[in-house]
Structures are given as C-alpha cells and as structure tokens.
Length: 259
Image 1 (cartoon, rainbow, N blue to C red):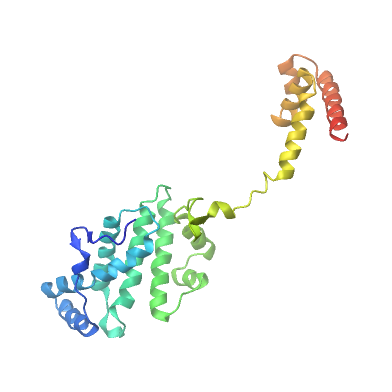
Image 2 (image 1 turned 60 degrees about the vertical axis):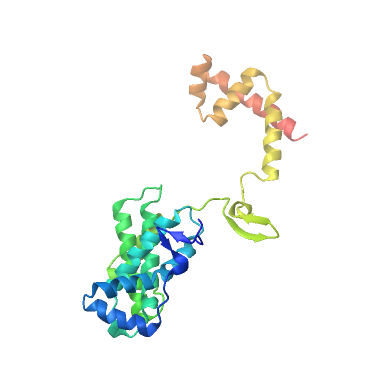
C-alpha cells in the first residue's frame, strides 16, 4: 500500500493546512456552536492526522484511498464526540477513534466470515477498552473490560481472536541487507523432522518387500483403519486367514527393520 502518494481521494496531501493548538481550540468552539464553515476548516486542518494514522496500516493490502476515507469517518466521529471540558488535546482523543474505525473496516471486510454475535462481542469489548483507556489513562486488563460490560473474559478473548486478520506465512518480520526473514522461517514442523523421514523411508522399503496380498492387508489394516472382518470381506477370504497373513507380514517387516 502506497501511503506516501501525493494525491489521495482527489486531495493534494502536500498542500494540506497545518493548524496550531490555539487555532484548533478556537475552531472547535465554533464547531460546537454549529458553525459549518468552521467544521469544514477543522476537518481539513486535521487530515494530516488521518494520513499519519493510515501509515500504520501500510502492511495491509487495502487501497490507500479506501483507508483514507474510512479514517476521515473516524475523524468526523471524533469531532462530533470531542468534549472540550476534559482538557485533552484533540489529537490525543482523535487518534484512537481513527484507528478503531480503520480496524473495524478491515475486520468487516475480512474474507474469513465471523458470526454476528462474535463481532458484536468483540466490538463492544473494543469500545469499552477505548473508553476505559481514555478514562484511566492506561490500557485496561481483560478482567476490567469483562467486568465493565458483564461478559466472561473467556468469551471476550475468543471473540477478539476470531476477528483478527490472518497473517501470511510469507509476511516479512525482519530485513537486513536485502535478506528477508518471514514468519514461515520461524515456524517449527514437529511432524516432518529428519528422523520421521528416515522412519517413513524405512517403513516403505519394508512394505515393498512384502507380497502384493500382504502389502494390501497391511495398508487396509494400518493405513485405512479397517477391521480384519472388513478386510476379509473385500478380499473374499476368512478373518482367520487375514489374521495369519497380517501376523506373518508384520513379523517379516520387523525382521527387516531390525537388521
């Protein structure tokens, strides 16, 4: 995602105005008095804030114009809900609102579908976490969020996990000198180790030494999970014969593997 293009959604970002804190507060007072011109000036004067936020999402595949529009929605919501009596800077209040709006957009457009009830629980937890953060000036614990909204902490954790965006195994996590280290490079495969490969090769060699009927019975019994009765029915022989051939085949395989 190219977050550094000059024109986004028809807006020349290189020419966006930069408002001082006193100017922002003066405009906000007029905004609260329903001055539409002041509102437009205030929004335009804070678009740089939206730009700085969407750069945090440069690792996503979303179109930068779409993220900018969603970020502007978060900015407008922040303007509508900003309380001047709290004595905090507007940017301090607006940034979490913009981030939250973009994250909700990314979750709602996720290709992995999540049930509405899970999304509702997750969004309620997110709103509550943001409110507690603003109220206490710190990140709340899961227990505090759960207590605030009356939902079990396990349900909150499950819902939050469900709406997380999937990460590609080929996502770079470290780059040095042109060499990239991806998530896949740090994932351990405990089922396909060298010792397992050697065992599989040896087992295949041992089975190849069996007669076609012995090999067929071993495959049916230990690879397909069939009972001796089922194997007997398919091969049209008695269960006693299956048992005798199976024991002989296993004995021959053990003999080969322990040589």
